[in-house]
Length: 225
Image 1 (cartoon, rainbow, N blue to C red):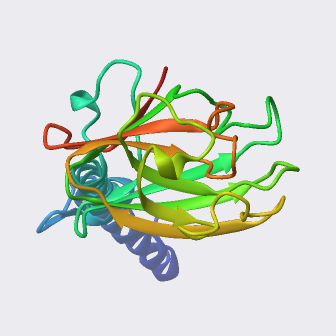
Image 2: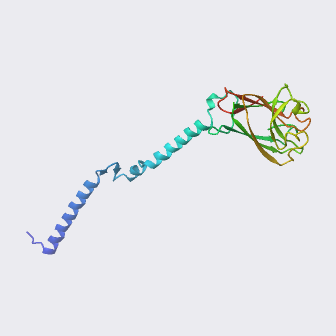
Image 3: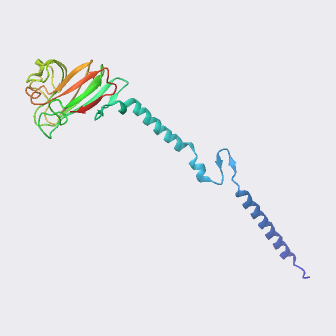
């Protein structure tokens, strides 16, 4: 039997030890090591299972739920109705009205002759932002009317509740020029109102709509007739 040199024996022993250590390491690392909810051998799973995505999703869901609760309950709206922006905390409805430059000159948001109907909860405040895009001078009034349709002087058809872009004494000839805007607000008890342009003859020419303030309305909305 051939005699092995001492260096060769040492080299063989070292090789055997390295193979054994490698085999042990592989065997140990092939088994996941659980530390709480963390799996050491599966970093992607650990990352996915962090609470951040769940928290974000939950926050988004809560925000959507809160927003839906605070802003509108669409299921309670009549067919064809569109919810108006509002703040339920201070019971304010936001009404954005434009005398549009397209179509006939006597219009509110492209409608005329009472086509636009606005519904608000009784006792809420209506905050109106009125913009005149027309070449003619226009203003915006809310009138507690006593007649079926407006005449040339709407002040004779009821009492003026709100004047925007004019005053209750100058509404027949004073208003906003093209490109101007104005804001005003009024609290509306239960009842039926007009919103009109007070310039003489404009409402009679079609520049009017209807506001219904009612205890049966819980979500402000509008309908196009």
